[in-house]
Image (cartoon, rainbow, N blue to C red; front, side, top):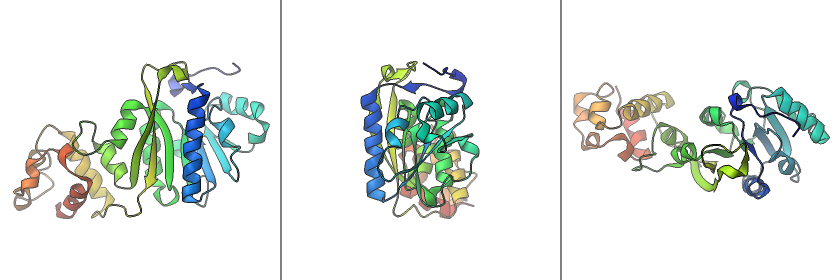
Length: 255
């Protein structure tokens, strides 16, 4: 191997070719469905997905890699990619394309949630995202109301994207094997995003409600509503029992 693994960067490199091809197939299907050609891969690492991805027909491909050593390795291993790899912190870059683009990759586990919130910032330009996460994180993102996994990240992302859990990825598919199972999820931008009073209100409500998730909504969010509003039966529920639409509706009743 011509590069080193850096645990501090959350690096676990995918080595199972079947899984690599499954991920690329999912990306290709979404590119066709959304009629887009621009794709940015986050954290290509040793190029497990990259080597299939950049060869897709009619693709405009960019990879963003923080680790200088991996950038040099990829440029040497795949000379065609030399001008398509950006050495940068993905969380700090401006949108890599002016027209719509997809965000994909085996995301570094230590910043995977932050990557999703970056995608949210770019909502008008990102119709879909295919990413690999620790299974626990993937399940939280895709969780439905009523489940224990349903929480802040579930609501904030599902307000804008329909989310599907695609498949598990076992630890032995990686080098080095992580201590957890991974999962691949698909985010597809909603044709009609939830109507909320403001994004800020939704964030405050969701974070406050789930900040004390064992309490009823009435006790957890009493600072956000007047007494008359708090008398509504919905406040007898806990945060995880509310639907996305109910959260959205409550943003219009906040103080």
